[in-house]
Image (tube, rainbow, N blue to C red):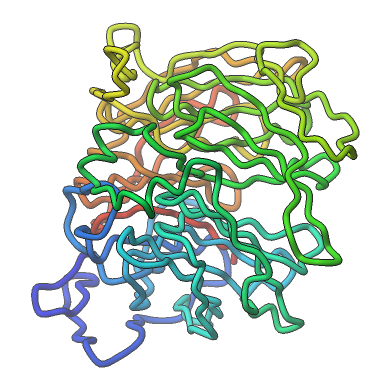
Length: 431
């Protein structure tokens, strides 16, 4: 499946012309398995980076058979520019939210309704007031949604109506020193050369143990901000900051579902850092600044492990003391398997997925294998509803590669491949 030269969609070797339609559909969703929603880049000229894949047209829907791992195209929903992060409402399964990424204008969040054929209907759209919106977090109360914008390090909080539609933002703020963007109007070439010249907030994750605190990684500052939602006023209140080792470039964070541990993928260094989570009351007016090297820190560093083979380790770093960055490979997504026994990280450049075993006593990691991703630039991946299969999106070679995962070892075995233009985010919706 890919973008047709006439603006249509190629599905099963036939072209469906769909310039005037909002959706392209080829049938009903089967009653079992997983629907995967795949966001694709539609205009690479306005991105913070320069993908080498073909241009897509929006969000594509595919069904994965839970017995065979085979992907079957369902259709496509026109959305842009550059649909990216997708998340489903936690209690209304047919409502989803999707962001758009653009460094020249503010991103948007689309409220979407999934149809019976797997396509998406737009209910509303709302500006995030930030550029290159890359992540969304729904507060456990389900009353608020928080967006993260990478380019200018802005966080925006939106109230959710009873119908779960976004209202106007109740709060928009920028991380310290991110005003560099508005004052200097940097180009993406400057950004790619100096990855830490200004802040780049990249994700917002609520810890799963109490649901009280939200953790925001910032790649540019080598820092994690910890927020609590003031539910009466719909605003985030910073409760702590965790200082990380300089030069690593923290991208995304995940928590272990049962062990009190957090895992941060360091994009610039192609490593994963393991932290012990030491929860404590954060009720004072002053914002504590914890050094993660200290054993009593809110996130206390345990160890860091490379995502690359020994002969590639150290190929991504901030060099020469000037802040100039050069890398043969840089890490992408990090995901914990639903069973909590294995952690997976993508490597763009080495073009592989690192598989780690998690110690269920202390959360530490050990390498199981580093497996080829089946293409170039594995930007994103995700698991099907059973945890048996993983779909990897190889951005620069325009493919979705399906891997079967060994239940005991976590080892990957490729079982299926389909074409997909510039896949950048993969989201599973259980049927």
